[in-house]
Length: 533
Image (cartoon, rainbow, N blue to C red; front, side, top):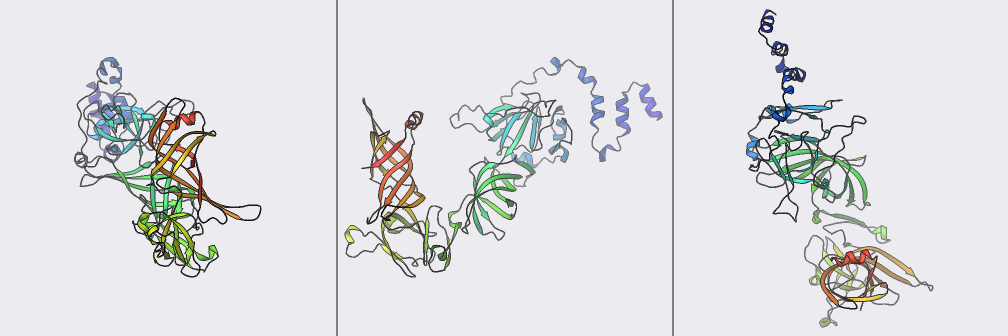
């Protein structure tokens, strides 16, 4: 007490005396920021025009952050993860806590899943190679406590390429595809006085995964339709080799397709994603998703990125089609292929239509990959499937096999449009050109099959098949003619009437053109139809 009185007589600030009197207890407690505020009251009286002069000057020379530098830094937990307490509106950040320039900032508290970057303070969990959505931090609305702000780069999540050094740090993201040489996706961390909030994004709409059960056996596929909630980082680890590993909590809405014959469903999915950026790589990727729950009851699954066709399983039952009550599981078929195995022949496979046939698990098609017309389907246990013979082997046909000839099964892909077909192009009843097909590389997918009966009760089988082919298109106008090679997509309508040995392609509707002409037709609300010649 006497020492305190002596210091007070010497003109020492009372705030310093209180801070020194607690120096033995600060090691085990959180730093009292109120004391520091008292110590820096005099600094707030300094003219801001002098104190902040040159603060926002850009730094044109910068260096990338190396993983080796990150691996050598051991930061205290409170520096790595400054958390917003309940009811807290602002955060006080000190650059000395991350072993940088000891500058202090008081900024509005971000959301729980966001990381801050302001001035020299940059949250160590912000690492190059990961994707982030960035927004400028705004003061909260005093009425409703909401922060009103818009994200940079049109709200897109971009891959962080580099973080510069120095006081004004340049943060550079991946450039747009049409601005590779003049990248405008960057900013400096001191260009906004309240700082910036980074939101980690590891999955996007359209990403596909393979669903594994508890025994690591493929059980289905999954496609992301929507991110239901912000993705929250749970841990950030720099491995000894220099790789960076993050675990992120996910809540997404997905389309789930099961291999055991269950109907596809749209369900909420939650889990923990493991995201790794190897040393020397430019971007991080999801290695797996664990602790996956589908809906409210299905739990214990694992997701691996991508869809492996060899893992896809289809279970078929003969009883479902009124045949011998057998059950088979076919592995390795694509989603658009119809299964044939043992006594089972998919009921969508009909004589008169064209098919390409591939053994399950193989990359090579039968009959040299040619689409052939299915002539007949035999009866019995091993059903003989006979295709149209080759022109040079009409008396000795070899284009046939039995349904049980391949123990692993086969896949039938329907074909409605073939190379060499010619079409007339109509819109509003007017003929405006012609199209010739010269490439049919992409699969053709049957989306609907129906049986239409006439007044006499005779049945006509009608198939709707999605096609995506490449054509040589010639469009005619009153003054000139335009020719162009382009991709054409649409729905082919093929039907086989009673007594007809072969199905007939009636039209290709719902046309889409991979050309600027498609915009012109859409603007005029003109519907194109391709009619075969």
